[in-house]
Amino acid sequence: MNFNLSEEHIMIRDAARDFAQTELLPGVIERDEAQHFPKELVKKMGDLGFLGIMVDPKYGGSGMDAISYILIMEELSKIDASASVIVSVNNSLVCYGLESFGSEAQKQKYLTKLATGEFVGAFCLSEPEAGSDATSQKTSAIDKGDHYLLNGTKNWITNGGRSDVYLVIAQTDRDKGSHGINAFIVEKGMEGFHIGPKENKLGIRGSDTHTLQFNDVKVPRENRIGADGSGFRFAMKTLSGGRIGIASQALGIASGAFELALKYSKERKAFGTEICNHQAIAFKLADMYTEIEAARHLVMKAAWDKDQGNNYDVSSAVAKLYASKVAMEHSVEAVQIHGGNGFVKDYHVERLMRDAKITQIYEGTSEIQKIVISRSLIKQ
Ligand code: CAA
Image (cartoon, rainbow, N blue to C red; front, side, top):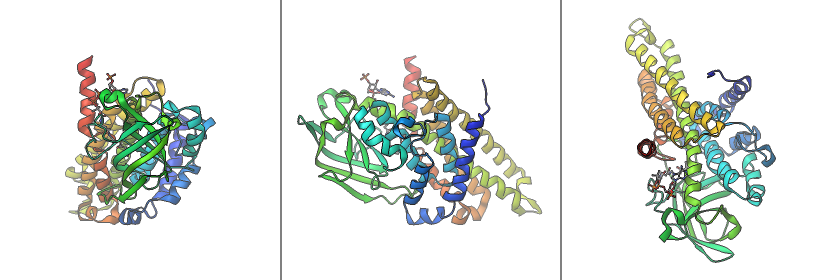
């Protein structure tokens, strides 16, 4: 076993850290307040190869591994989780889904643009009555020969108003349950495809979240991804990788909050000394560091499993479950260490605390991760 990062990984991490400090940090408070989608920063992240990190260079990607992906995600998320979720969804849900399950024609037409950041993508699974219970898709895609007729509503869609390409999961044959579900590529502007109002959110306010409506949208047959009925497996497999991305986002939020709290505790004085010298604060720092390190190892393990070609359904669920818990608990502790200043936007930790909450909800709630983990244990 080797716990050291390679020279190349260190360079990639440092490049992402530098980008986060110089490009994401200025204006992050204002973007959060105004719910401003960072379009110009998305372009810059595309230029750096952050939107197609693991995609084969022959499709315009950076050809990096999953360890590089989580290192980039952690650094971006320390500063701006709204920007990092755009990166995560585009990489692990949209690019990965198309590269692994799409046809060559679909890859040439869509993946080449998504991997470079010319296009942004969205992944549309959740519905008003099918969030955790993803098999209960109400959106229907009726086979009409040369096309499918798509009808239904999708909720809480990240990049919902800003994407060019939408991967939409829908039910084609209800009698077949999860084996009657398909995944489709829908383009912005297709007739009958409407983007609903933007959600006003607690956290990741710079990311763009919408309800989408499909009314008799004619989706060409060649836009179906994979074999007929393979859409649920497509969604589950894609989400397993997505959970590595969200786990690394949670890790970044936790470590970002910790770094701010440590720095503040060495500057702020109370009762005649820096507050880090009080055991009440010192022990909080020790607990935060220990649990963040544990989360880092779990996230690394899940990414390593993916790079090795091992099954990562369970390790990704474990990493997301634990890292999101650590992000939530320790971002609250970081606010506590900052005292009154922690409640003020200028100190950044209140934003990290608000951003942490979504990591326990999207791409499968913590309860769903426990279902995935426990089912696998019981099956063994
Ligand atoms: N890989 C491949 N196949 C899988 C799989 C996986 N990881 N997980 C399940 N399957 C297969 C099963 O083997 C089964 O196939 P068979 O019928 O041939 O045996 C089939 O899929 C159905 O599986 P289950 O019976 O386990 O299905 P279920 O109804 O019990 O649901 C679940 C399982 C794990 C709870 C699933 O519904 C789930 O993950 N729910 C959460 C959905 C989710 O994460 N939503 C997030 C929305 S996306 C998002 O947040 C994006 C964003 O914008 C940020």
